Image (cartoon, rainbow, N blue to C red; front, side, top):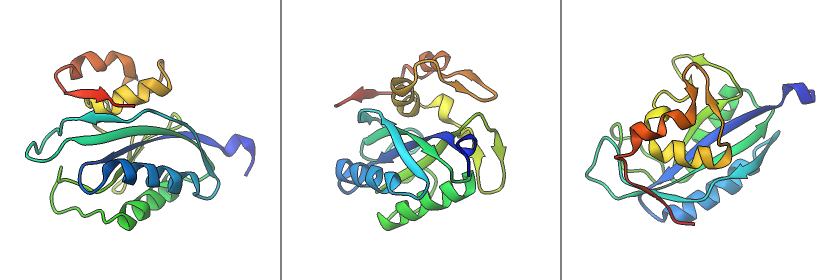
Length: 164
């Protein structure tokens, strides 16, 4: 592949059971070790209240910026393997998790398939995605939606705090 085949992708990381800080740190190392991929930036860690299913512990979240030659499908498969290696289970939507890795953005692409939707379909509604994402790029745009910073005010009721 040529330099032109490299894409900037953003991954959302989250965990709220087990040892979330250790799990996110390990996941960042594992993502950075993926073939044809390197992490170029990582946000700080944020503590956030759960959204949707509220009866669960607070989350620890972050966003990583990647430079990758992997296709969106291959990147998703690798992320799911990392989740699985950390004991990720999916008993119901919004369930507590040992590790959640979401492909938020893949260049400026819009993808809608049975396996993958990019941009992540609810990213513009989630403070735990927007705050760390905007820390990495304050003028980033969500394809088909607009500038990410325009959505943050609509999420102002969602509890989130940067912890490091």
